[in-house]
Amino acid sequence: MEIPPKSPDGSEKSPQSKEMLASNTASTLCISSRSESVWTSASRSKWDIYHKPVIVVSVGAAVFLFGMVITSLSCIQTKNKNVYKMCGPAFLSLGLMLLVCGLVWIPIIRKKQKQRQKSQFLQSLKSFFFNR
Image (cartoon, rainbow, N blue to C red; front, side, top):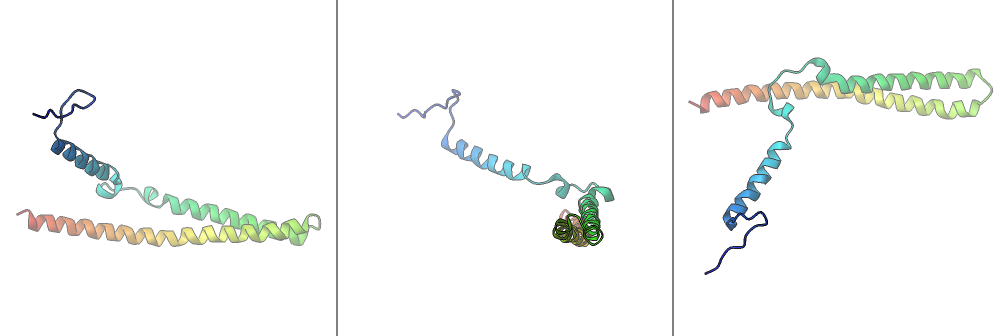
């Protein structure tokens, strides 16, 4: 008669229970990895929704203005003119890139919010009809 090997903590577990434990932890990991904000229907403030693109737009505008100042200094000052001519357009392009990325990000978030509202509405309709 075979005696199943004991685990290090002294408890005996069958192979079936080990498989169930492994599959249970995998599903638990999958569930815990989901973001709660996606699955909960709690309303968020406008700042919570749009704070990232607003920050990107603000930083982009600041860097763009800094690039304009540096570029205009290359026209006014004669000392370090080559440095201003080299750095000014770099800051202009970096600021413009951040500004445009932030401005494009805002309509994308709006579209996702509308889709989320539609999907929540459809889920409530589905649960209303199928839970009767």
